[in-house]
Image 1 (cartoon, rainbow, N blue to C red):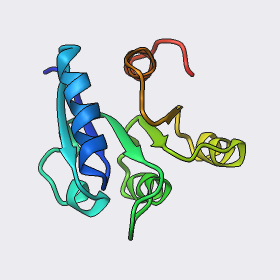
Image 2 (image 1 turned 120 degrees about the horizontal axis):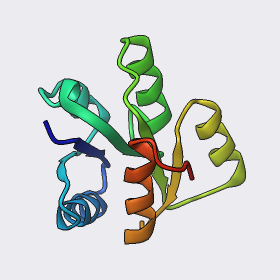
Image 3 (image 1 turned 90 degrees about the vertical axis):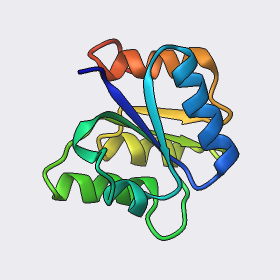
Image 4 (image 1 turned 45 degrees about the vertical axis):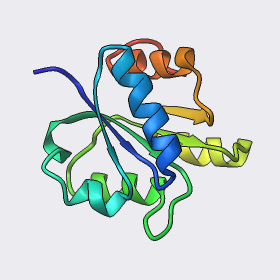
Length: 123
């Protein structure tokens, strides 16, 4: 089964851009408008990489990470943000997020993120 990459972002344009870029790279990608939508989906068990926005209403990217870990679903996860800070990056990495991406995410950053999720070098 191919790796499914789920993208969770409340910004529709950003979500479409990232999923479209992933698909253009040959990956199976699906987008979700909220963490709650992702958690309720049938794709949760099939997701091999989760890329989520750091700032979302109701359930943030870090909150989503905590919920997945509490549910026994340690999906490899990257966070993306339009407002990067060193404190935010450190908090994400301390929570087990393996990649901290800055929006707009470049094709090179996205390719490196996918490679890292599959055992490549971490970013």
